[in-house]
Image (cartoon, rainbow, N blue to C red; front, side, top):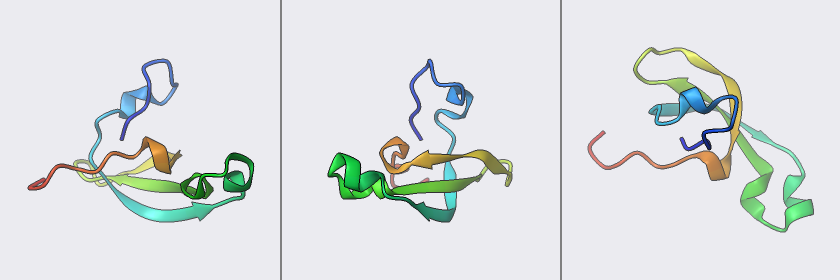
Length: 67
């Protein structure tokens, strides 16, 4: 996942995760971008712990093939 350095949850940057829950809201109606309606709860694949935050679709970066 990508979070800018100033974000309070930036310590999770680069964590390889699995999506555990998909959340939806109506942010897409305000922005006009359909993917803005989605945010996700994640599980750290290294520690097997759920992360204590939900991240927006645009903050996720696909893992490279082979990971």
